[in-house]
Length: 357
Image 1 (cartoon, rainbow, N blue to C red):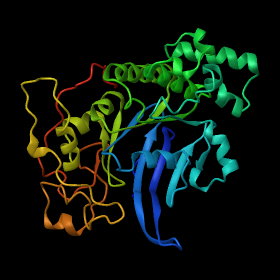
Image 2 (cartoon, rainbow, N blue to C red):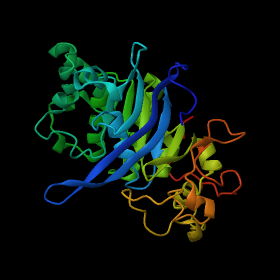
Image 3 (cartoon, rainbow, N blue to C red):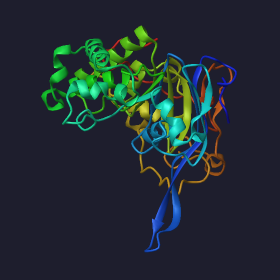
């Protein structure tokens, strides 16, 4: 199903993903015959509005990063559409573009990678790293680029005197700031943040998240923020999409999702968030048990039913669709029992970060 609003009807929508699938073939034998498919992303629908942050959250292996790579066209999706509104207002389906046609949109869609230690070329100086997108897109001369790099470093909280240094001379948090400066260098419309703070200490995570929020408030950047940590997602996102086994099971505004979750999987993820109050004990009855089914052989019906404490026979037989909740604006859930369950909200905030919105 296509979620409301529609990018062709609402100019506030920057990205509109419809029915996106990414299936990886499984090869066996000497002749490498196709024995099946891993359904890493399996029918994802979502939209991102200009200037907002959409958080994508879920367990490791749920398809978050694969979804981001498909949007970046680092992977060619099996099927589906990725509609993107360019800087001049034109709408393009990125899945239909050739490699050459896609090149112009790479300037408008940038990425901040997960690992600040491996995403920076150790043989390049900071100036070369940050200015590389400018060089690739033939933007400005050397003097202009040098001035731009200096301004970008200052914008992300680093001194312009660091331009001649190499990545190994910086801490993890500083390296991630360099990665952010590189992503911002071409003034993109959309920035995909793929687990940008997961490799950092909690205190450094807060600094990077605050930096991204401040940059968004000043420059109006749009983020697709991928993470497995709900505490991080809560503080930076305006809306949140919860993924399980390649599908979105719940999509809502951040406050609505955390205060009133409608899917049992969302409840279970939130139950695992540690409370800052040591007197509050973890309710282990809400925690997930069992293993995630194989994405090569997903169970029939609802894919979460093998781990769901509220499962009914219908859940085992019919696959639920992602539909809008009655009387809940912009709240979509894929659950047969949505609306009838009294699910527990998330505990209080655990990071010392001002909440977005």
